[in-house]
Amino acid sequence: QNHTIKGFRASFLDAIADPFYAPEASCIRYFPDGLLVVEQGKVKELGNYTDLQDKYRDLPITHYPDRLIVSGFIDTHIHFPQTEMIASYGEQLLEWLSTYTFPTEKKFADRNYASKIASTFLDELLRNGTTTALVFTTIFPQSADAFFEEAQRRNLRMIAGKVMMDRHAPDFLTDTAESSYIETKQLIEKWHKCDRLLYAVTPRFAVTSTPEQLSNVSKLLTEFPDVYLHTHLSENVKEVAYVEEVFPESAGYLDVYDQAGLVGEKSVFAHGVQLTDQEFARLSEAKAAIAFCPTSNMFLGSGLFKIEKAKSQETPVKVGLGTDVGAGTSFSMLKTACAAYQVAQLRSQKLSAFQALFLATLGGAKALCLEDKLGNFEIGKEADFVVLNLRSTPIMALRNKPIDLEHPPTLAEISDQLFATLIMGDDRAIAATYIMGELAHQK
Ligand code: GUN
Ligand code: ZN
Image 1: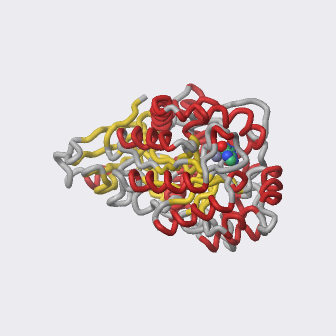
Image 2: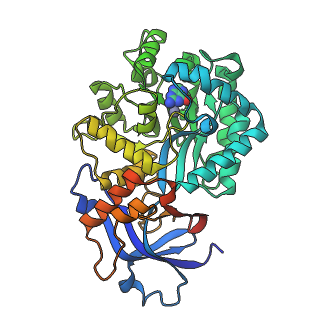
Image 3: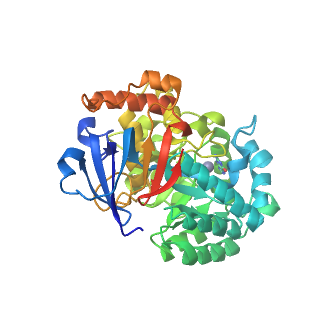
């Protein structure tokens, strides 16, 4: 089935460069009446339907009139075991972890339970148009196995890893420097580059790892140079103070990871709300990435991410969007983009619709070093994409006029419609989700 060549006709929008650093018109491609040709699950061609229709005369075409197709959304930070504890009341980070998170994660020692939640979680990602994510599991290796198996069954490009925690957590949720090293190594050998899956070495955060455990993380990154490092960084003021107390010889939070050798091109740090200018400069120099998680940062009262620092000319840092469920309040990358816009507003910054689209697609791919495979419809990339309904509720149908191909929307008009969809949209706007050119979700 996957050997067949097929086409999709609709409006198309994708980001081919970073609109934080170049004029938007040079960063965005827009085909009001486009044809996407997919062969063996990969993009063969994207162009205007009228230009391509003769070349592909016998092509079976799925037509989505009045729909906008964009590249699949990339969630650069999320916790699958926290699915069931989303919207837990009243606490900030450290108390939220001990009150709600750790007791929930304990349940994932049960492999069957982990599989059940992994399945629900992946279905929910697809319902929201998220086709790739960087995912925390728990300290139990069987919870990582369960996640990878469910992702493999759905042919998804997912990155995940077993959590490593050897102190400052309940006994029922701790490993040791030694056991975490051995179990992580086994999981890397089993899952990294197995089908579309990739591995991220995942120490939870500086607070919950001894220097010995961090040194074993570094050892793993040296032994397996193409795996990821995924952790939390500078989220909450009390957390930053705690890290400085636990690591008195470090020059700051990022320096704890830096001294252990964990800050590199394949490092993804969630949050970074409390980062200093020097830390932004260091992340820029190391080509490390930040997962900006606005719904989580507001829900836990962590603060407002300095998007203008991360996307500055002087110290540019790779940035992706993360939902951070269960501290994040939605699986929807549309709702996450809306929250990012609000955070930018509270910092007197503007986040345009195309900038938000970039962060949710190509920017996320770049943050995960996957821009050769994902993020837009360039030839040869994997055909993971989302069919958007810009008129999925009565008010959105009023706000966004139907696409009339006799008078197709201009780039400015489609930007305006996309903006309204980012601000008002949710899973109802996701008409369909395709994985490697195959239908994976339909509303
Ligand atoms: N820092 C350490 N663990 C966590 C977690 O599970 N969620 C969030 N938001 N921050 C963390
Ligand atoms: Zn998190």
